[in-house]
Image 1 (cartoon, rainbow, N blue to C red):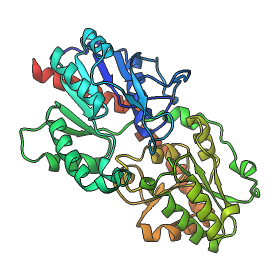
Image 2 (tube, one colour):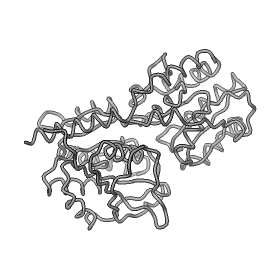
Image 3 (tube, helix red, strand yellow):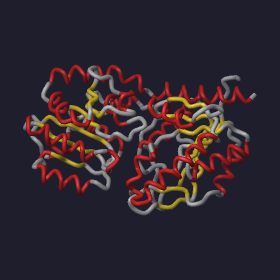
Image 4 (cartoon, rainbow, N blue to C red):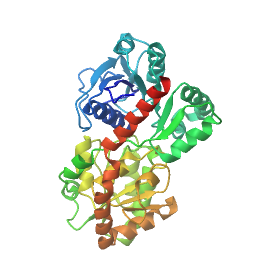
Length: 397
């Protein structure tokens, strides 16, 4: 098949201005494909009235967007998290008229169903990027968690089998999906992480968080970036910091991001006696958040529910050594002993104290992090996705 321009319809369940790993990844793919000269139609839920979707900072031209009627989910869904309001609409018919050669879904739910219908109508391969370990969010369902998990597993298996390919952003997740699908025939399962704008992140000016938080200039700042939610294990990170802080009075913890655990974290910090040494920024635009990360001394990440851990790659691109819990996603990004440490949950406090107190080692790891960040660059990842698209199309001719 010739290296011709492709028509790609991308369907997403949530989009900007709501910031998440999924919305950042979706924008990176859409703009990255457009930058390579491909014709992209992004089908996304419309923002709330008066809200501007803006950008998370991905380079490349903005794709054409077909807005779906949307609704704001009630709590515990965060503000700004809107999903499609109907299973089918004139917007979906617009996607059919676009006549895509590839349909790429980023959710297995409402927008995924639309993507499947559109792919069937135009005879295009359906590609699905599995961004989320949905089973790790069962605590939001309360008593429905167990029956909900069984129903979800059945739904996912059926959806995967309607796809020509399933992309997993992490190697562990790719292996898990392959195992759960069982014996062939089954869709192709490939590991392609979301790429980031390495050069743009490297060029960001650092923002010193010490004046913002009212901390002394000699403070050693541990930063973390992400939603303050139970599934991100921010409580575990706070506990580990408090234990490490006993050994080193210079340590400070900067939690960048908002979320439902904010109040509980502030209360817990007070109970642990570290309230003056912990600062929560609330939600920030992505570039502002990364500038604060860049102004810190090291990055900590305690989540065990990641498919990729995109913020870990971003922290490394900022030139920060990373201390993270060893698990899916993080082990694809961190090179232990080179640009960070991967540890068990029980060893997190000790690792934070050890690296925070060793300035020469931090500097060595910071240099290695910045030097090795090119492996996360978006252009290479877009090339892999386009290669998959072309292989699928070649297999149908």
